[in-house]
Image (cartoon, rainbow, N blue to C red; front, side):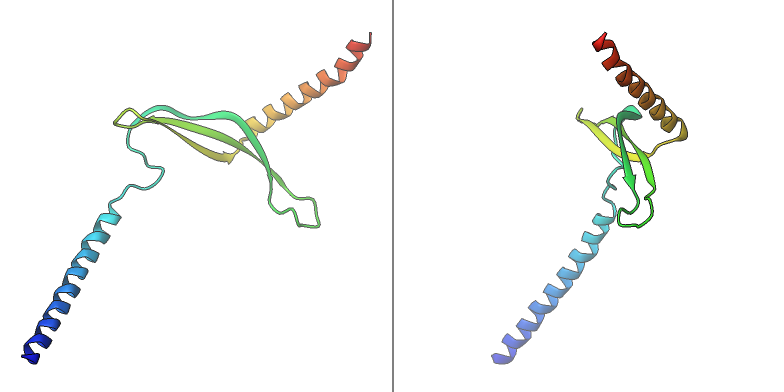
Length: 123
């Protein structure tokens, strides 16, 4: 009788190991088919466009020399899913030379206006 119980226990363990192996194999296959973040399936409503937000980032602030600043531009893309949900994706990218020149022009115009403004108010 004890021998039958021991054999029964080994059969249960073997079935458990076999079932666990099948679950792992088929579970990993499904995990491979999941969509990658950033690869949303849906209708493109608006491609990447600048939002107007900019950022200056330094590579290292602890450096004894003057750190190099880089101009970053924020962009967004609008998609609509199959159920009609609007999804907005944001990303930061390095600014182009033209965007950098535009920023300098705007900065200089603002400085000129702010320099003239106190004189205009005092006269």
